[in-house]
Length: 162
Image 1 (spheres, helix red, strand yellow):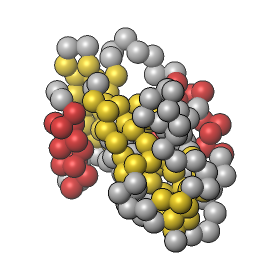
Image 2: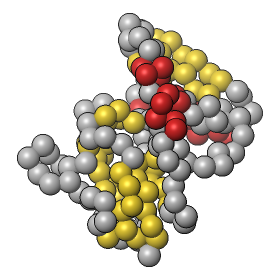
Image 3: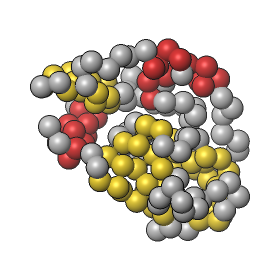
């Protein structure tokens, strides 16, 4: 199953009233859960720690699922202040703040951004996808550590709109 098929499956599940789908293939397991209720606030934590969010996890069967237990304290992180806009991950992959390890970050806290300006890269299946801002404003907070895995629709940045 390739990345495009996974994205299409997520879209189909969102439009239906199916609660959960699990698919297992050769050394590959995919579970997609439907939202239970609208999310009231953005919490800076991985999708696994957010009960009302979609959880789409593609991992080898041999990988332990103990990671979510160690990340639950992140749920108590501070909520976004006032009128901030959240830039979310459009895909599952690995988050990188800069184009390469020896280059500076695309954006830092306090930087002004405009629609179309690259804010990060998400690597998915050996493809590096440049993620561009869709809002104009100032970066208030970076919610994800460099080189860490991200889930679909996971908050990446908080932006104060201009």
